[in-house]
Length: 214
Image 1 (cartoon, helix red, strand yellow):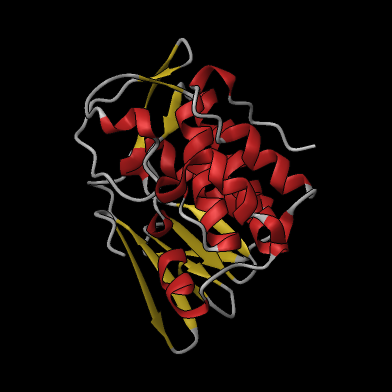
Image 2: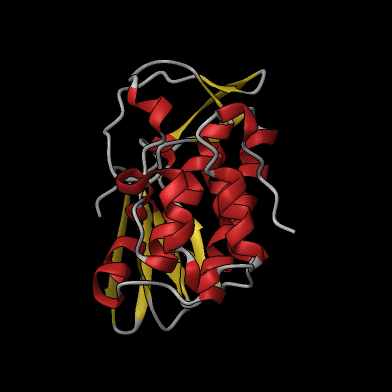
């Protein structure tokens, strides 16, 4: 996965996340630092803060991890959900929200996850994500976002997160099956808190979706 403005390198047992000042928005550094600290991920700054040296055994983009391992364990799925929830709270306080995320928009740092693709972040106004840039459609794109360029309700992000979790947990593409069929394919996590969370977020009607994990 390649994200303009970010580069991950690995040399002599150290993972460095390079941040380009010209491409990265101001809020991203604050977000990244808070996210790493919240998850007790050890890191240090190099090159006047432009490099985050991550003190971890393994760091990789989530799409590469899934290509090798096929899926995430249940505990890892909960950790990914926690990372999404933290990012949502941080962004909402900035009147921003992410949308149309894909697997390659996350870093997996040992057993933790960090959303890192600031290009997928858009203005948030009155509960709507203001779509100001062209998007690329993929397997986790919410159906209402297929109308490129339109504003969408924040519940579009709920659907997006749930679609990713359904795939990394049970190898199920919601876009290929529809919400009704998906229930039977989530048998491995049936009656878990994650199962009911996915069902609340994957309602076809955006106004009925709920981001609730209980």
